[in-house]
Length: 363
Image 1 (cartoon, rainbow, N blue to C red):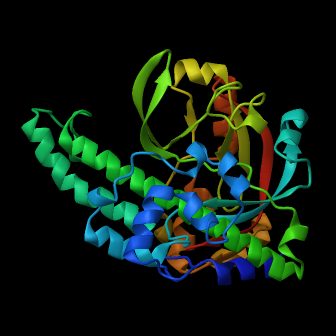
Image 2: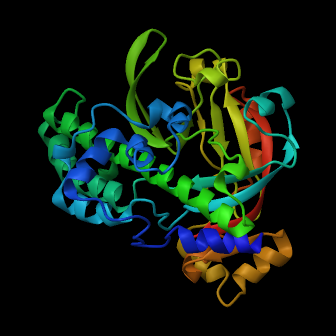
């Protein structure tokens, strides 16, 4: 296990400004990446074509506009394809230690004792820059369209406006970058695991369960109406039978991932019909913080963080910076088990399996 974590740590660049996972794409290749999403990586031997069946929207949001993206976003994003970044992003080795719905778990290829690798990352500096670029645009738009803002971070424009159309084109480009980024990391994680175990990749029998956004705004149909759903700190939870659920999961509903923290369990859930009625087919995407990053750094100053995680939680953690680990210690977060129980009691999403962390790579 230690060698597996070490090999993932060596293979997937992480931390603020991390880069160099794969050869830097040219500007033309980058434009292609922003339109194709995960397929761009697969065409370069990073993953398999069947992966696309298990990624939200097939790993590509239509309507991406590379022309709406600034030069600064390209410069930041080009070297960072296939990198983890910092903050709450992670690659985690997990084991299924509780099964709540065995038949559904089997549809996902899971049973008690199954080993999984979870990856949480997004559009890196590229997406950050897209957001930063459009703050100024949307501040002006809010004033121009007479929109009163209780907080400047809520700056916006009518969906039919030129500003909004340009932003959604850039946002979809960032989403496609994120799909590609995770696809590359998944392929790199598989290679790292094979090297650590001294086996061929094909012998690992790894397969993608699902890949989904949790910070995105997009057009969807709900109750027979076409609406723009903005999920921030939420994830999609489509019910059984929904046309956007992969064929293999039609009878189960969409897989939903709720990460825990570096010491406590994560969960795989499924969407259901009530979420479709009550929350535009959405549920939580995590437990949420109890303490800020700065507060955590003060609280654990001087402590042996990775030693504590291994001794008290049995989790091997490798981080690219001490601050990155300090900010994400388990006590920073609420207990995910309590949160998913609330979601289940509310009838919004249903537990399938619990995933105990074994090893974690942090930025």
